[in-house]
Image 1 (cartoon, rainbow, N blue to C red):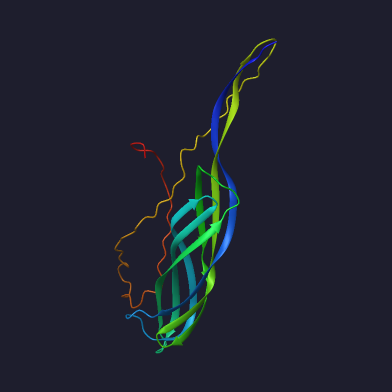
Image 2: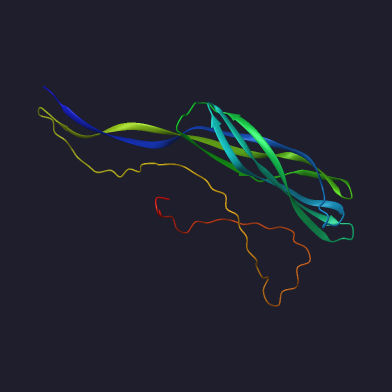
Amino acid sequence: MEFHVQKQGVSRYECVSEQTVEQPVDVELPLPEACADVARVLRCKATPRVTTKELRGRTLTLEGTITVQVLYCTADGGLSGFCAPVPFSRSIETDITCDAGAVEVRGASEPLHCRPTGARRLDLHGAVRLRARLFCRRNAEIVTDAAGGELQLRRGTVAATLPVGLAEKHLIVEEELGIGQGQPAVEQLLRCDATARATDCRTVGGK
């Protein structure tokens, strides 16, 4: 008795490696020229941003910047703050070799230990966490039809998504904002944050 089976190939991305590492931050920063002398540090936070990811064999190389945000009291009792970029490079050994893989890296903001070493210099120590996930494309075959002998089939339709890629892109935001009518003039900028939220996703011209 012979059976004839028809199959169809499908693929999906599977997370095959996940690691969380700490990237040390040990640096001494001078105050920008526009900032007043520091008397006491109130808050110091570090936020990592990965700009380059390269996977060769089992070695994942990351490059990026750590943005340090400092809020402090000035010598005359006022408030001041500034941001400074600190470049970094890190290599991570993964658990598996993946030829057709994609990498996702997320960083978490962490507080830093910060102390003044003078009126215009700060000594920073701490670390930020980087979570790296490696996705490999897995191919498989599913039975779509069969015939032969007294074989009986129960058919059904299942939706499937074919992954074509996994990518990230950094966007540059440039905007001039007003503070509104009746508001006092800005004396010192302490902090600036932005959060991106996608409201629409579609393909245009194959992109």
